[in-house]
Amino acid sequence: MSSITFPYGGHGHSASSSFVTVHDSHHGSIPSYEPPNDTSSFQMNPLSSHPPRTPRTSIISNGSHVYGTEIYDTKEDKEVTSQTFEAEDSEEEDEEKQDAAKDRVRREDVWRELLKSSNGRDKAFKLLQYSMKMYLLFHLALTSSPAFRGRKRPAWEAELTQRLTSAIAGFSLTRKCLILFNWLPPLTSILAQHASDSYAGGAKKGRHKPLLHTFLHAPPPVLLEFVNGLADDAATFSKLGLIGKKAGERAGRLADWCWFASTLVNLVENSVERSVILEQQHQVESRLYDESMAGATGKSNPSAQKFDHKELARLQRQDHWIQVTRLKLLMDLIFVSYDVFRLKRAKGQVQTFAGLASAILSSAKLYDRHKTALSKASSH
Image (spheres, one colour):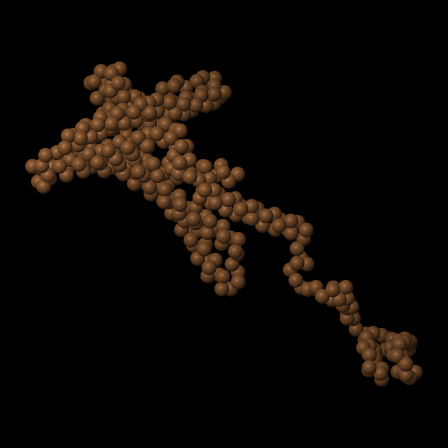
């Protein structure tokens, strides 16, 4: 039998209680342990295989949270989080600056930028032209009523009507001259495609595709715009006296058919684009609804909600202008249908209303585009 003595730091221990006798394993005896008589202080069981760990005095004394999530964040995570918040803050500041700059943009500055382009001048002249037509339409309806039929009209009224009629014809011709050579952009697109196809074909097979092949395989909207531009120019040259009257009438007829077909194509594209926007808007609204429902459990993400709100506002604004464009295209379709199908009933009234509505809608869209560009330029 062998013995092992375990000393204890406390005083007053007897010799019989100051050691433990452990038998050899071949005797099959169970080791025993006699606790000391002094229980005033903690004593460690020497037979325990897992002695208690010493607490971290440095952490506890500092009063920090041992199980807090901040002890698991690495330096890279903190840098990424700080960069994300900085990017969001800078984006919010840019948007706030842009909104403040948009409020400071004056109407005069927008119209100045709008009238610099031929498209903007065309819209301004169209507004003047159809506003005068609307005035003459109401003036004719008023003077032809039974209440004013027997009255004598003043001389200045007939002169004003004549001047307005001449001004309307002048604005119409001016607008036609402003859109001269509109066939150049589609032609440039077709030639660029032809050069790309010729380069690819020459690199592979050593031969080039003819230009006619590129024209025939061009997208239908591009071809319609090209033919429409040529026909419009021929009709304008006829009004200027450079081409015969019959040739100008045929060119105008072809231009009307091209305008009618391109309007239908644009309406189809507008419907497809709006369906995509509505689908994206539905997805964002679904995410916002899920996040609002998850907010009661504390699992919502404020940053994601803020981004979704901004995205929803952007999609709603885009959908608004898509609907404005669709309404403008419908007005154009009504207007050109009277010329294409040679309708006579209420032609002047319907075309005047449709032309003025189209001018207002297209001018509003162009005005907003120039105002947004000015606000972005002034915010930077």
